[in-house]
Length: 320
Ligand SMILES: C[C@@](CO)(OP(=O)(O)O)[C@H](O)COP(=O)(O)OP(=O)(O)OC[C@H]1O[C@@H](n2ccc(N)nc2=O)[C@H](O)[C@@H]1O
Ligand SMILES: Nc1ncnc2c1ncn2[C@@H]1O[C@H](COP(=O)(O)OP(=O)(O)O)[C@@H](O)[C@H]1O
Image (cartoon, rainbow, N blue to C red; front, side, top):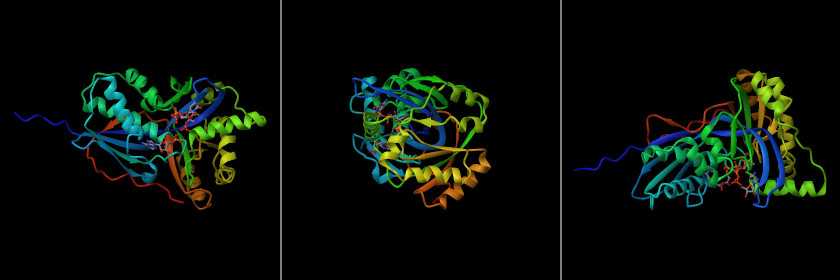
């Protein structure tokens, strides 16, 4: 009798920005204590997993040349971590990544791919695992990976992996400015430690007002409260970001912030129409590599239909 080969499984997974990011002390394990408000955006990656005689990773789309395809790809590390969790030796799986999220951009693209791979494999391998059990495996892979499973808007504490959902029923509209090169997350944290040894870079206050603004749904209220302790460090390493942040506001955004460890800048806009206008003007300002519009919050990693290992990457929305 012929064995039935399960069809490939595709999962779409959102990017994230940090609406609020407060960085505390460096811990003994090399991580910093964080309080952050994660917000999942419609800018996304798609991950397809399939059983294959030749296991490995293929990468297409945004930043494809900068993504490792070997065992240090976060998606492959997710395959290995889940296989170990369920005692599955030598997983024969092919992973295809279609990237829309900028690489090393502070938008957690690698983490997103890892989360999507975990979700896709639960279906391919017919595993009976809930999101909370997957989140435990996810947290071993990176601080941002559990959030990509849940999406929405969430308060993250610990090193960012402990999550509580935040009420946010309204849709917010964003413009994203991608830089020419990425920034390394550990380097940005190190730079913040250095700045703090030598001075007193600005610190964001409590996250509570951000949570209230999210509940109100008023983008003007939220715009006043966006804050990121890593911004000073990212700008110190990449001084041109100052110009990008100014240009977004000059183009009509309500406010701008560096996303996570950067260098992507996220601009909050009044509504969807305004976001398109800001994007067009920012694209012409010559301060970044490319510009996208996005909205949030959106759900975390989820299955999409019409599985096909080689479907094209979705076209970019606005180019600089
Ligand atoms: C800064 C943030 C904000 O959401 O996002 P990105 O800008 O990278 O997207 C995250 O904290 C990044 O999370 P993630 O990218 O998963 O980082 P990890 O792989 O866990 O850690 C990479 C390195 O970053 C530093 N790190 C990360 C998290 C943390 N709370 N403290 C740290 O000091 C450590 O040097 C660690 O070795
Ligand atoms: N699937 C992946 N997608 C993107 N980058 C990956 C992936 N796997 C490993 N990496 C490595 O992780 C680094 C951080 O990438 P990424 O997650 O995109 O950025 P950030 O941590 O700034 O959000 C990249 O420089 C790249 O070398």
